[in-house]
Length: 226
Image (cartoon, rainbow, N blue to C red; front, side, top):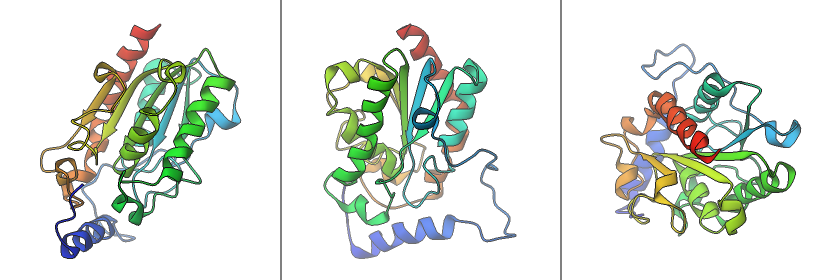
């Protein structure tokens, strides 16, 4: 990812901060009505499908608020709430801004947090069909984790959705060492994060509108995997 100047980097950070509405401030962003935290894989019994999601930088909970919870809810609406377990990537992934500047656009520790969950799904729920997703820095977390998973765990993953893919240019629009047919990248028009920069534009905050289509795509991949 290119870092054209300190000014651009500061603009990227400021873009996130200024995009957060203040109390009572109106916003054109889609209203959020879902929980920012989900630990179904960790805390509950195994379900037929497990959705693992990594949030973006500075987002709350372990699912965030821009798109992760909505994909979870749409999957549960389409496939049944009792059929889909949703699990966010939490600690030690803290979704800090500075980790975006590392060579993998996230840290090895962050990547390891996702890997631990894929391993847990494989050992705890060997018959579950895994789907995954990430937003912003969370796409780098998923990218780094999935490409290094053993084949047996990769084969359990039916599909991956990536929103605002920070490594879109570096990794040629996909996840290395993972089938392109199982990967769906969402890059909004005008989202410069997808163009190898760390500049946040309003387009980077619009991916909630893609949640339903992403869930439908994952549903098709799940059905194909059965």
